[in-house]
Image (cartoon, rainbow, N blue to C red; front, side):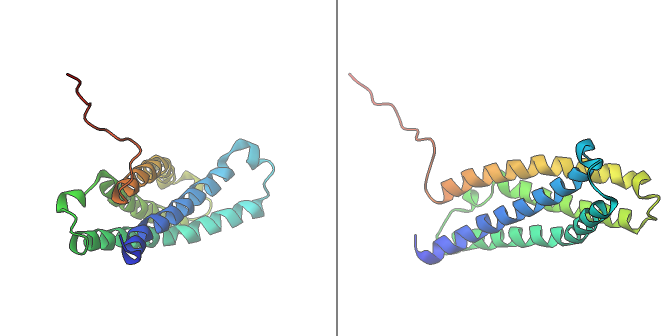
Length: 172
């Protein structure tokens, strides 16, 4: 494997880890407002700052996830054309879950925009808030699955394996 091969292959996992960290911070920041222990110690100004940052970063989330998926597609095309990897090895559960994450991120962005455009007194009563929260929680499980499967896939692509299965030797 050449240096170019390694850079093309590693671009997606590195960007993916940064995006995963971004999405986790996005989720955990807003969850910190809802935790009962933090609610009493946090000022209204701090809550507003966290909410504004959450909304601002939430608008960028679909673009970030789409960029990571684009890097993955480019890397897979490169592997297929330049490295002669069979088409069957280019498709994976990791990839399909990534597409599902993009759909969930777009959905989150839409419900978030809908909530932020509602009047401030209606914000906590909007039905989208519950949907938004539930999708966010599900996204974290999806994200953990994607990261884990991505790690295993990266090992496979790089030719490494955690498990070596060989045929047993027969003694006669």
